[in-house]
Length: 380
Image (cartoon, rainbow, N blue to C red; front, side, top):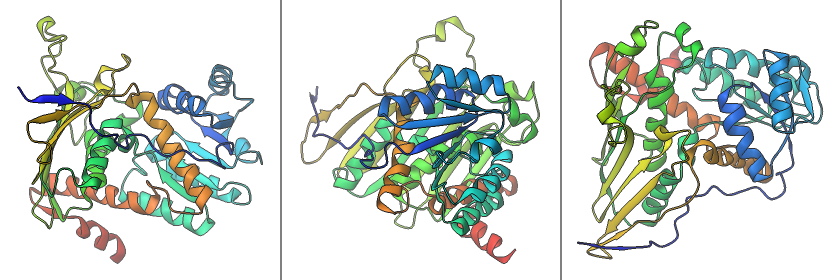
């Protein structure tokens, strides 16, 4: 059996701000992602949420009390008037987000940054409009692509940056899990590519840069179809890179039979990833499908510089909620250094274009270049 050793220290945690940690954060939304992820992570990191607003004032009051936030507002418009709010954290459905940001940028006199949810809009065109609004107002925009801050994803990026794996040859993400779709998705007509696959597509971009084109195939998810019609349920896609790399993902949101007792605890439900390089192999798991059980993601890797050895670094942090320290931290770091965030709006347009290309590829049964989406928008 190959020897297993503890690996060199990998950069699996996001850098934290030094001077901007106490900037006042105003929160819009009180759903799960805000109440159970963002605010939990912010308190753990010592960030400074000072105000919150929601569609329902009672919800804002309840979440404010739970997380020791001093001010709860009946509407987000009232909260935006608060001069203590210097950064706005938005957690609303994608088809609402553009209108919210139109209101936020009116307060550029005291608001310096926005952390917006992914997807950045209901489609690529809306995402472009959001980026333009923030740029014109001089407000720094970051997009909550939180899988980039999953600890195994960042650890793999660290391996790639250090050259441990050599030139990447093949990568895959295999998801067999059943997401909890939100009620607002019923009015969208879509589910997986913009909500779940966007994590994987963005992770491939984070690891390897931008692909040239995408092949995609989708079908409706029978379980979700019982509740509402939708364009994309199960999603399969292949990314082609100029250097020959191929990256593929299988997003199986059906994962049937999930109700068979013998399947429970069998390991059939989960997310596995794999990166094969010229000089090494990394493989990992994503702990999210086990939520609320706190299950850290993992990475194992081997490389030609240490033949016959497997390295298995481990950590106590989990994607939900700990990765959400990173999404806000990188915005605060960017404000500290007057720089573009790691997950800035301009960069996220390429992820949104990739998602849009996957939709086109699935509808038209052909390979679609990412630049086709970008050029089409520029011509419009």
